[in-house]
Structure formats: C-alpha cells, structure tokens
Image (cartoon, rainbow, N blue to C red; front, side, top):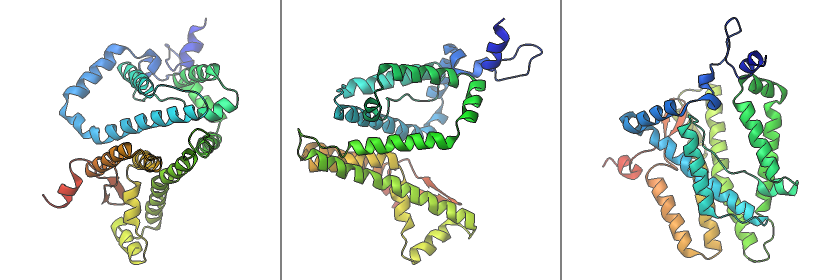
Amino acid sequence: ALGPPVRRMFGSAAAGEAPGMPSSTLAAFATPLSAFSLLKRAWTSPRSLRYIPVALPLALTNVFNTLAQVGAASNCGDAYDPGMSVAADAFATLAGACLGSPFPTGVFVGQPAFKQMGARHAYMLGSGLAALFVGCSPAAMAAATAAFPLAAGAGFLLWIGIAVTASAFAPDQGRPSGRFASAAAVAMGLVPVLANWGAQLVVASAAAARGGALSNTLEALAAQGVNVRGLAALAQGSLLSSVSLAATLATILERHFGAAAGWCALNAALSALGFIHAFRVEGDAVVADVGGLVLLRNSGA
C-alpha cells in the first residue's frame, strides 16, 4: 500500500504513473559498484588532468574551512583536534565519492552562534536527517524550495556570517594580543572577498551596458584611474587568499614568525601556480589562469 506514494516521493514511477526521476540517479539508491567504475575512469583518463586546477583549490578551501571552524569552536570552549577533524572530513568526503556523491562534506559552520542558541548534538543529527530526506527526494526538494524562498535562506546565512565574524572580536583573556590579531585578521580576510564582489559588479555592468569587449572596458576604466585589473587579480582565488592572508597577518601579529614564514611561502606558491591572483580576459568574462608557473609563462620562457 505504501509503494506508490514512496515511489512518487523518491522520484521513481511504476507502470501507469507519471514518470519521475529514476531511483538510480538518487544518492540514497546509488550502487557503490557504479560509482567505483566512474572513479576508476577518472583516475585512469588523461582528460581528468584538466579538472585538477578546479578540484585542488576547492579541496584546499575545504581544508581551510575545517580548520577555521575548529578555531571558532575553540573560542567558545569546545576543543577539537585539528588533524582528526580534517581527517574525518576527508574520510567522509571519500566515502561519499565512493557512493556516487559529487559533494564534499564539511564541519558545521557557526558553532559559537548555534551553541549560544542552545543547539547541541541533537540539532546536528536532526539537520542531517532532514537534509538526507529532502536531498534524496525530488518531490520533497521541490516542496521545500517552494515553501521557503531563497531570500529566507540568504538572510539566515548572513546572520550566521555576522555571528561568526563577531566571535573574532571577542576578548581573549588568555592572550592579550589575541583580540587585536583576530580582528585584524578578519579585516584582512574580507579584502579578497570584497574585491571578488567588486570585480563581479564590474563584469556584470560591462555586459549589461554592451559597450564592446570587456578588455576595452577595463582599459577605459584604467584611464579614469580605476584599476579594475588589480581588483580582478585580488579576486581570483578569493577564498584561498582570504584564509591565507588572514592567517599570515594573525601569525605575524602574534609573533609566530616561523608560522608566518610558512604562510608567506604558501602564498608565494599559490600565486606562482596561478591558484590565486592569476586571470585572463576571455570575451566578456574574467577567468582564472591556473596551471604551470605563471611568471615563466607570462614572460615567454
């Protein structure tokens, strides 16, 4: 008796019913063997190399995000081992990939705010179960997106971002310099993200005005004293550079010069390989110029 409504809920259709999404396309019903064949093809095909410039920055960003959330949790009295947190996150991502999921996992963002509201383990468990049910059901996903507009979700994410940012300005009695270093690091971390936002506005405005090629627009703005190319360079890899530049400044202010030197070396390597700051103009778009040593390539070597 429950068969037809369950099939309709999860997208598969029986004979004579309205067609829906095949159950083989759903994460809950994907067989590991089919996912393993796709992983084998990805590892053995030379065409997969073209996706490394995209996959590697995303993986690094996910690692940095996990470390940032571990630090945020420690500020509200919850100490977690950073290495174990990154390892658990990586294992869950690999397990999901073996089962056909293209999405990486991540630790909860905004733990200080959730903890202040009284949320504990049950909140995380309930959220996971709800996301599992909605994500595996096309009908439930359609109902959820119809019931809750995107503006409501954006407001919630904005509030979480404000709460997380505010935690960086909380006084640290154990480290007198910790408050200033955290505040300065937050301010530094906002710069690449704001540059990315500004670059997107320039590109979108140029496309809407239809004033010719984007390169001509950039030259016209440069003639008026607006260095959009510098803005675009700072915008490339903004998530990576935001974390790395903020960490560099924080370690310098806290006089951990060895760690600061390591972050500076990482910034130099990311920039040299094009993961941050490197871009080129293609038609009406600014795209990342990743791959190889950027300085050698641009010098014609």
